[in-house]
Each structure stands twice: as structure tokens, then as C-alpha cells.
Image 1 (cartoon, rainbow, N blue to C red):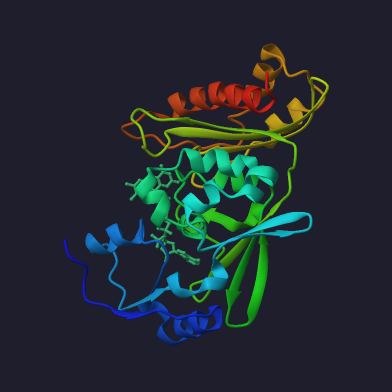
Image 2: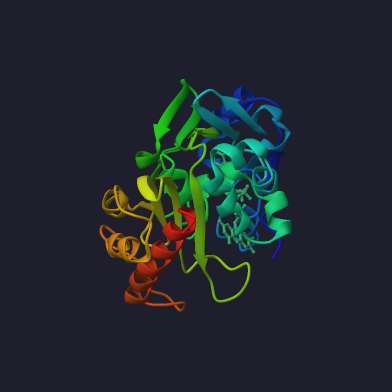
Length: 284
Ligand SMILES: Cc1cc2nc3c(=O)[nH]c(=O)nc-3n(C[C@H](O)[C@H](O)[C@H](O)COP(=O)(O)OP(=O)(O)OC[C@H]3O[C@@H](n4cnc5c(N)ncnc54)[C@H](O)[C@@H]3O)c2cc1C
């Protein structure tokens, strides 16, 4: 179907984009890569009168080093994140997750910030972003604010970004030297995950010193598996010890049921995939 008629603005600065949002209020919608928004418009599930395109704001693109964190601009395409050397060195978990995100065409158009702002519980970027303790920088009419990982995802397709605000960048604390693995379970290639697990591990001589684990599609938002993380610390990176810790993966989850599998099936997957992801991240 063809989308309903809309007006179009392409500002070149964040300030102009925020002003345009304030001016057009409920009638306006931000577009980034359009990979999730355009299907919604074409199905006429949403019919904004004004589309504000962030594609010409150069300041929102790219990855930079900022001391103890790397900063990923919201409009950085998935494909650029995937091959960025700073991401590979300091936030390898994000590189591993993007490797599994959709197909090459969508990775070239879709953006890091667009995927996080969209907040699909099956999206591949939320779990690694929260596992690494990312901070989300949001610009609005009264300036810029920073939201911690635990507070960014609010509910199904809902984040802490207000209707008059724009996600500008994501600060990812450096996890240099950590092993990382994203274990995604799908029935066919390029599908959204039925369940996926993001794991980063810092090992010292065969013992797990620190661990970060995030779960995809095990509730309305991505979930940090803190019980697993705590159970892993001080354990040897062996099949038996990691399996015992992975048994905590379902704590605090509320997995959906759909044609791909019921909630119990997803709980089973969470345990199995957590074990696999942690062992791979630990290099075991
Ligand atoms: C066939 C197909 C398969 C896919 N498979 C996967 C997959 O396996 N895994 C996966 O994770 N994703 C998948 N995706 C989604 C893909 O990751 C999209 O890139 C992503 O969901 C949206 O990013 P975008 O830049 O295209 O955002 P858009 O579609 O432009 O925007 C999405 C939403 O976010 C809002 N938004 C965008 N940017 C901002 C911002 N900076 N500030 C505030 N609000 C903003 C928009 O208003 C809109 O509501 C798939 C998409 C398609 C079409």
C-alpha cells in the first residue's frame, strides 16, 4: 500500500530537528533508516502529517573514542557499526550482535539509534546495549539528558525518549579484552530471534572474573540476567559450572508465546542459549 500523504523536513542540525518536533507536536514522526517506520506507514498503521528525516544530520553519524567509553551516533548504519574498529576492540558484544541482525540490505539502511528507539523486544541490539551498561543521550527542548541502560527500555515498543525528544548517541563503557558472543536462535536465516542471549566475559586464568548477560525476546523489554552474572563470578569456565549458572536465566523474565514457540519453550531456550553464549564468550 502507499502511505498516506505527509509533509517532509530534512534538518541538518539536532537543534533544528528538535524545534521541528516541538512545532509539529503529535503530527510529527522522526524517520531514521526507515526500515521499521516505512512498513508501518505503508500499512497505514500510523499516518503522521510531518516526517522529520534525521539523515542529513552529519553530527549523528559515526563512532568516536571518549576515554572510558565509545560513543555511537544514533544515525550510524548497522553496517558501519559492524565493521567499526573501535566497536570491535572495546564493545565486541555489539559487533557480534550486529553480525546477526537482518540481512545486508537492512544493515545498510537501518541505524543503531533507530533500532534502539524502536524498542522491538525481538530487536538484536537492546540486550547487548544493556548488558554493557550503555547510557542513552537524548536531546529535547530543554537540552540534553542521559538515561542509564536500566531505565531506557520502558515497555513493548516504548522507551524513555519523550515525544518531543531525539536519541542522539549511545555511550558504551569500554569492555576491552572481554570475550563476547551473541547466540541467536531462529528457524530461518535473517529472522528476528525467537530468543537470543548476549554474553560478555572477563576471564582470568580459566576463572570467570566478571560477566555481563542480556536476554532478547524474553519479556516486553530486553532483560539483564543479573542472577546469571552473579552466579558466574568466581566459577571456572567449564561446561558444568556455566550450565549451573545458566539455570538462573529465566529469573525475572516473562517470555511471550506466539507461533514460533510458547513461553515454556522460550524459557528452555534461554537456559540453553545462555550456557552456549557464556562458554563461547569465555573461549571454552
Ligand atoms: C525484513 C526486516 C528484517 C529485520 N530483521 C531484524 C533483525 O533480525 N533484528 C533486528 O534487531 N532488527 C531487524 N530489523 C529492524 C532493523 O534493525 C531496523 O533498522 C530498525 O528496527 C529500525 O531502524 P531504522 O533506522 O530503520 O529506524 P526507522 O524505521 O526510521 O524508525 C523506527 C522508529 O524509531 C523512531 N526513531 C528512529 N530514530 C530515532 C531517534 N534517533 N530518536 C528518536 N526516535 C527515533 C522512529 O520515529 C520510528 O518510530 C528488520 C527489519 C526488516 C524490515
